[in-house]
Length: 129
Length: 135
Image 1: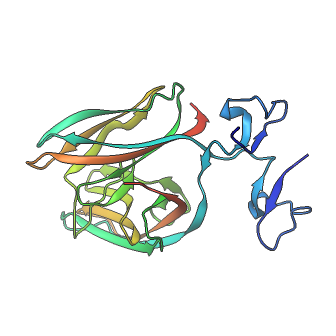
Image 2: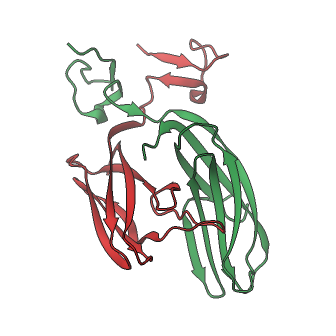
Image 3: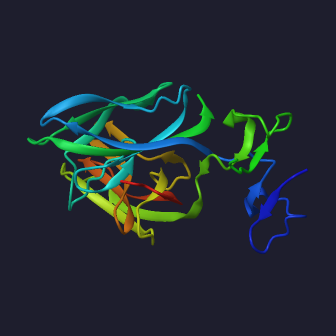
C-alpha cells in the first residue's frame, strides 16, 4: 500500500516522476528532528569558541542560521557583508562549525571594540552521521 | 490520546516505532516546505586593482519573514556548482561567494580582491523554503 499526493495537474494513480509529487510514501521525507534558538555574547576584539547544546544524543545532519549585528541573516559561515554594511562577527576556522552527539561547536571572532550578540537558530535533521 | 500520522518504512511498525530513521513520515517532525527556487547571475571582475570590491545580485523572497534558504554557486558559469559559502585565496586574488537574507531579499555576493584575472559571471542557484527563521 502506498500513500501519494501529486502536484496539481498530475494523476497520483499514474504519475511516475517523483518530482511531481508533494508526498510519496516510497520516499523518505527530510525530517527536522529538533530545532532551537538562542544567543551568545562575543567579547570585544576577541576570538572565542562557542557551544550550542542541543542534547539530541546522536550525531545527525545540521544547519545553523545566524543573525549578525547588522540584522542580516545567513547560515553557517556565510558572510553578510557588502558595500553598504558589514558585520563585526566572523565565524571561522576549519571546520567553521561542527556537530557532535550533543553540541554544535563554532569559533567566532569579534573585530569591533564593543561586545556583540550573535543570535542563532539550529536545525537537526534525520540524517545519521 | 494524541493523534498522529505516521508512515513507517517497510518492516517497521508505525504504531510503535520511535526511531525517526525508520519512518517515512511522522507528524511529530516538521519538514522543510519547499517554496520556490531559481537562478541569479552576478557579473564580477577578478581584477579589482587590489581593492575589496562587492558585486551583488538579489531576489525578493516575497515573505513577511526571513525564510530558510540554501544556495549553491557556479563560480564561472561552467556547470560546476558548489555550496555557499565558497572562499578561495590564490596568488594574486582573494574571492568569496556567499548569500544572506534581509527582510526583503535573498542577496548573492561576489567579494573580490585581486590584481589579475578577468570579468566573469557567477550563477547562484537558490532554494527558499516556507520555514520561518525565528530570529
